[in-house]
Length: 114
Length: 112
Image 1 (tube, each protein chain N blue to C red):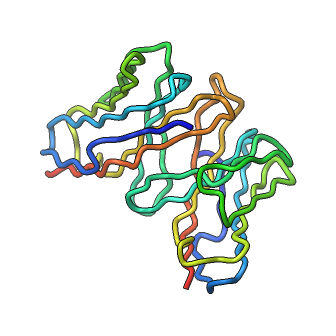
Image 2: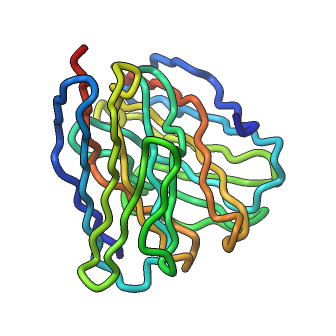
Image 3: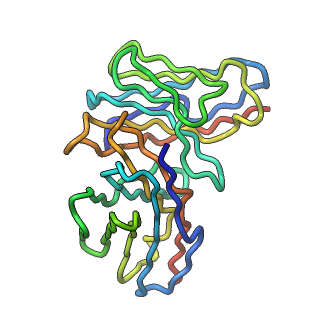
């Protein structure tokens, strides 16, 4: 398995509170991604990073922010959690393209907003 | 952006039969098409992929075909086994920004 660790694996939080999810990789891959997975929607891209301090929005970025201060860490923050953000969140990593285009996923974080 | 559609959403087959999952994509710039298998409670695992300069690729019981003209690609699993039961996702990558766009998944059940 690719060296990707997500933390925490499970979290329950209250509406309106900030939440930060962490993704840590040991593969030195350039690209890192945050996806959310919901029934009927598959995997939807929230934000991604193409290098330290280089990030961009995905298709469902509203209510989320990210930071990448080191190659190995990519943080996803829910600024003020809402019930609609209850989901399973996956981090993924990928290389520079060409033969290294493969994306590998972490084990996921199940977030419940009550 | 890219739009990937996947069918069927659920599929049941008898053990030993074949299973086929189909996907279409919209962006002609997409050039890399991976397939993932996700077991309950786990992250998606890459099982096979194909690049736009290849029409077919096989790996033991699984194969993927790509029709660039029609913007279709398919996953074929032969001699299915109960351990093939899982959710399968197709994806497309245009390399621009190295973003991956996923289908909505197919829940495959192999009946012993």
